[in-house]
Length: 201
Image 1 (cartoon, rainbow, N blue to C red):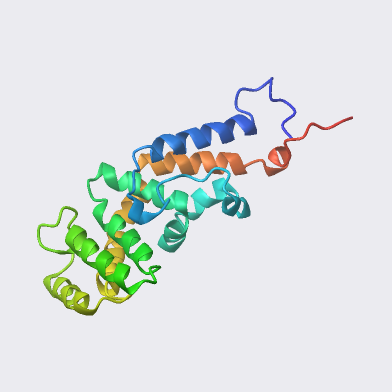
Image 2 (tube, rainbow, N blue to C red):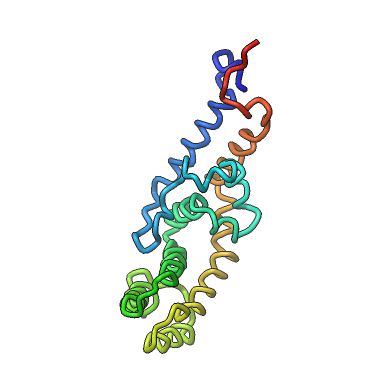
């Protein structure tokens, strides 16, 4: 419990509020398309987020790229960072492929496959991803009989590129370093922040 809320300007509750404000500002530039679902929307009170403390979620992003991609807030923050580098197309393609794999209708699958190819894969696509010629042509061939796995090779290569290149820069960015520091501060005194209910003595 925070018994000295009025006495100190940096109580645990205020630190938590400031922390979320900082992340909100960081995520403000993230505007992922509908193809990526709700990945661009931070989840402050979503029931799925309750399973893990929000600050622990942020600190977990530096543990592995998988943890970052498994967190909707992490994906949104990473996307916002990539936009500052004008390199968000790889992540948007990866997310579009994840949504693509969920499609069950063969007709919709084929239609979406061509849409993704035109947007991300073909030469001079508006959001052309950085893949080699062989992968591009393999993907083009796969479209002749589109399945849920037709983008797997291209998706895997863009993921590897992000993990080796963009992800380390994200972790070193002032924005993430600031968020991590705020998260660490929020976790520093768990006993004093464990309850929002006043104590009766």
